[in-house]
View 1: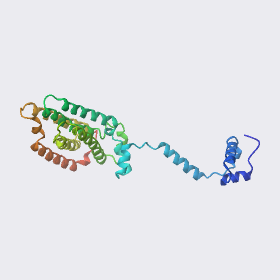
View 2: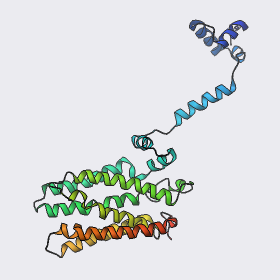
View 3: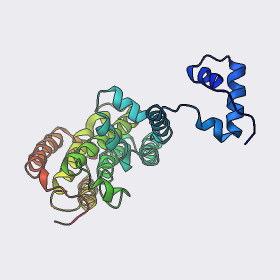
View 4: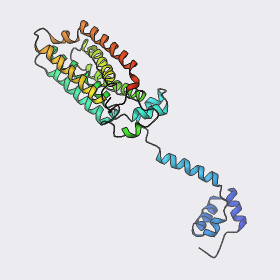
Length: 276
């Protein structure tokens, strides 16, 4: 603290903003070392508090990622976007793992020495499983470390499960669809896996009204693999038309519709991660 202090006229002009830049810097330099002169400056408490609140919010605001910006531009409400972007299965690590698995299937199809039928079957068997794995990580333990917090939110329950499941199914289907275009002479391979994927995802959500979501996903995924391998392993005719032909596609669509009816009727029984 110094013995010399700013006169009142200079402080008034400083408060009104009438000083030039040089004098403002000189006055502020003095006030940094003089508590007495600082106490004489008029302070608008409401203005200061409001500005500090704005600065605090800007510093502590969560970082907005590209997925969140895209969903916001598509017109989704901000609170819904935050719930979707917090989905564990939408993290880059999961998406990269999905792309890696599909890449291996495509490479197997490209470099297979057994012809495109068996190579295509490998892809068609793998692709429908990935959205099911995504659904199992959409909500609840052990996939979601924030489950205890999100579970107490007003939006928790059936709506959150279905919104997140829709998001992860979309991401998985988009990734698998891109991989399908890389298949040699893909033809109808590029779409043959869609109805099985729809059936497995819808069936997983329907079964999750009775058992925990990861168990439902694992059960249907295991049954799918066992069924396809069992059917194709004991028959000699081409495997792809047998499992993914028109008759099979019709069966998948009917089963998916039935699973959707069960899901709609029992949707309020969702409590992911808990036993019924």
